[in-house]
Length: 134
Image: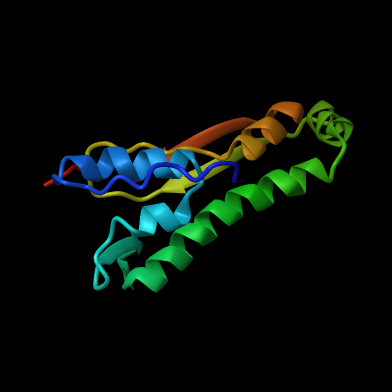
């Protein structure tokens, strides 16, 4: 990571989303985790709860790494391979499933993943469970 992004504290609950998203865009997992209290709990998905800063950091780091790993996986293959599969009649897409219980979200993919998908002509599709917010 080039320069460390600003670690401006959240002074108002309305600041949290903006700060979390800007740190996510920068790949600043440590900065994302700094926004959580030491005993915070997040719903990771499927009702699984992630408790405490260390576990939340591991969760966010795992998500970022999984997307980067997908990009590296594609980069180890020649684009001609995926073009050949497509020519043979296969439909190739990257599907990302998102489970949420709110009415909106922002999802940012690492540039390495998007570039690799572009080199291989893969569309990126996000599927949501579309649970209405309470």
